[in-house]
Length: 429
Image 1 (cartoon, rainbow, N blue to C red):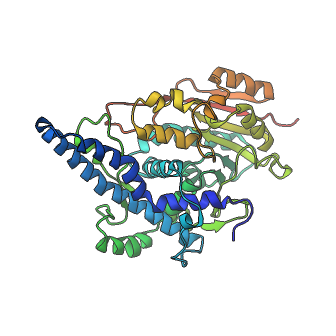
Image 2: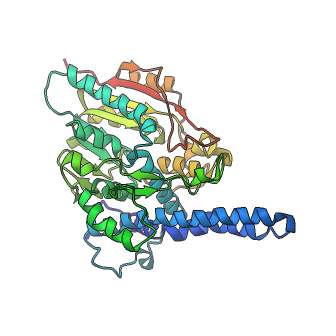
Image 3: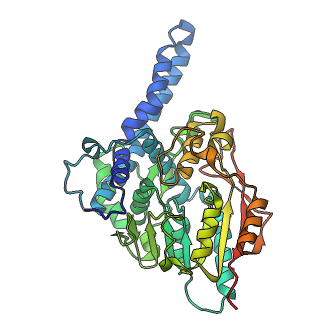
């Protein structure tokens, strides 16, 4: 059914993780805390046990709401892949059982829907995305050729930046090796007012676990429900937001279609192609030589095991005179230095950091993958870029701080002072 480039085991495990969101959340998040509450048996602990159980019961109800979004992603994906008619198909029964890491990535993906596709998270996205949009505009204004620029965005996550670039009229290819995030992106980009009106609303009439926004056109998501630490008020854990903040089809005037032309799982629209290509492995051929005007990387550079591999690929794929725009931190080792490092902070921060760094592979124990990364400063990176042949066009030392799936009401605020630079592959004489 699928071409050789599609890892069916990873795909089916992603489906299984979305399907069993509630089960995994109960086992991984709620059950250990319920067991702890059950040990509070002294008379003076009655009130404490009652408080814990009240909070856990509220969490259970709202996790089921998030679980319904996961189920909708699963349902939409099955229909998208045209095997939704086989209602008896169970990936787990065929040996494709989601791992603990699959479940963690799905929980992180649900939170990242808030980051990329809610109005309230615009302040988090804006510093990075707007910097790229302005650099692309500057490049377009000064280049002699008119028309749309061909842009590559690897590590695209849930694809809000590629969507914005496509909406601005450019020809965009986005890569995301996580099948979990590709399935969620398909759900968001396929979201129409008709889908909300005729499908979601009808489901909500008989299913209390589907929470609709006041206008009935959006779904409510609870991004902090699995986060138990650093809340000023108990209700802060249970805040909800409407997604998506806009209807993508209204902007791009097209519903995405399923696409295998890249040899991987993919999404295709007129000027936006999204696929599971690996940045260093799948762009080495002659067909990708000098193929793009712009390479845009946001919160991506530090996913490299050896950043020189990314630099060589960038040089190969950019046209002479093309530019590489980069915005983001240098979180080389998320176990040691990240928001969840040393188990400080909350499991949500740890899952978000790890999900961004997985890079298409199942996570392994600390010291086996991330500890083997070559960890460089921004100064060293700029020196290597110059050595390869790039010309530094811009090094913005006044880049604003940016969070990454950050609860702004939390008592713990993790923010990055992002690097922001632009380099150019010199034009041919």
